[in-house]
Length: 265
Image (cartoon, rainbow, N blue to C red; front, side, top):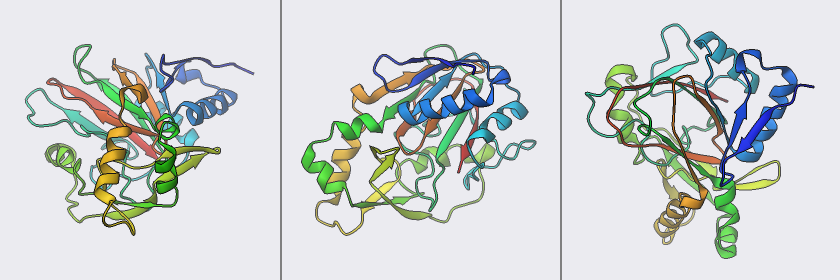
């Protein structure tokens, strides 16, 4: 058995994996999946995967999901290009805490992001917020309150404006609102997590008078510093995270950046 070398971040929000993904073995994939379930987000530094190799590696985790708001890569239909140019104005795509496509009836379980071109070090970081830790730190009365509640998630939530700004280059013509309902508390291998995407949630089912107050409380709680890790990208880096246990957010920056995204059903 080929062991995986790994190192959790200092605050246990995620985990660095030290292996060459071009030579990864089947038993190592099993270990990577276990670490993903435990930490929520994994970071693979200095990888030199071609688009074909990147797609092949991602296929170990499930079926590629379609993203209705962006056009796929012209040669690799499971890959979506997220790009910012130094001449762009306004917010970056995904700037604001969210979980990917939570407005879909069956949101993607996992997201891969690969750095193709990045700005200078210290710019264009991605923030990750561990929702296992966020749930564990909730007051007991809030845990009880949200245990059986469902949130209403919309493709026209407040983060939608960051997507619209970038639609000209890679966007589709999709303008119709997409909505779905999901439990605010999810469970992965018996460990509970908050599933409430601040960028998409617009209401709570069967909760009228308190819903705004509860959403605001959760949205603030979920992104506390102690649950957060800021990942600085270098060309070739790959991040893989669970959308059920991790929020993420792009950060503000000026410069050129191109990322390849794959989501897994």
